[in-house]
Length: 103
Image (cartoon, rainbow, N blue to C red; front, side, top):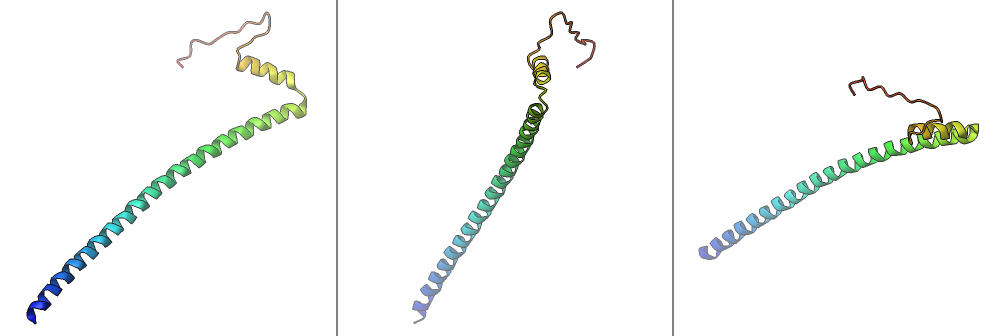
């Protein structure tokens, strides 16, 4: 009868070892999943922040355009855009550029 008990202990040890190994693997999987989710969360937070700054810029531009429409000062707006963005000047107007600055 002593012989039958020895293999049972060996089987119990191997099954407990496999159970321990499975638990360790499961914990490792959960740790890696949590780290991955935290990294994804920080990336999404950064994307939200960029989207909010873009939204704010668009809202400021929209407010500026609404101002132009309500004030009826479209010609001044068009002139400013032509000068600043397109580089246009009025006939006979001289434009001086400051080349002495270090920038």
